[in-house]
Image (cartoon, rainbow, N blue to C red; front, side):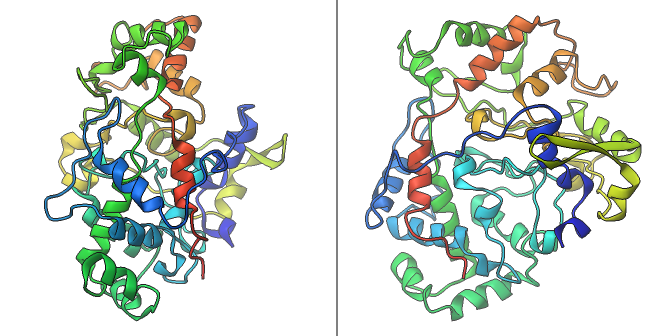
Length: 404
């Protein structure tokens, strides 16, 4: 059973999202307003990955992996296929749910096969083609190789080796024509990565209200509160020193690693858990449960040292990659462990100066923002939601999921 092996953090995420803080899950993104033609959706996906979008640079495709419709179609199938996990129950899309912004609103941290817990939040893969390196700790440099880690991780898809996955795909008859169409060759490790990379780079969206206002020059595209929030974001709050805005595009990340104090704070709480914790047992019904009872049916939570786990350099302890901020409205919960469930909580964390640890980044300091100013910044962040999310969902669901 999931509850017998999941960590306490993962178990309690639904309560945090819908009960403890009085917030509700967002409405899932619907594909109905942008129906995709099952026979031609790959053409739109390819065009999107090859065309600069307002607010974004051109997607950087590797020289040895130019995108094609056939690669994108194969990558989509791989992304949704549960047969790629050891017991044929998990797919990439079960942590990166299209209707949930290719993230997962319902869990603070991801869950793998047989309910095994992952210690980090599953981030959205929208615009992932612009990121390098990948993962919260930057442990992989490219989409063409990133997929290996979750496929063989014991607490994710749990395959005994990546060779096992290649062999499985080689023997699945529905894959041979797709690999032939994309590569004129059978399944292999590099071809799997190239197909998944091509598909994920097609999940690219700019054209938010902010983009139309800032880069498009449409003064009416973004409201007054969001405009005030932008001034605070780039000025008094100094958010843009890490969440960078360039002159002709904005990824809202410097792609660097920083200690905000949050990681160390969370580790201290892991080592000193509360006596009780709120657990939602029905909509709107929350009970305080003795934490020892939660631990008795949960795997122990792991420590998370961030970038240090990649470099083993002491100076990298507690550092995590700066996340991009686009489409935050559809990618809750927040932080690397998904423990903050609303943008208001995130803003309050930074407004108070983070955790206040002496070694945290000097830019994380008390900001003294008023409730009105925080509301304006939140309005700006919500204005980073792209048009076309429904079309990404529609393309993703243009064929039935491959949950054989």
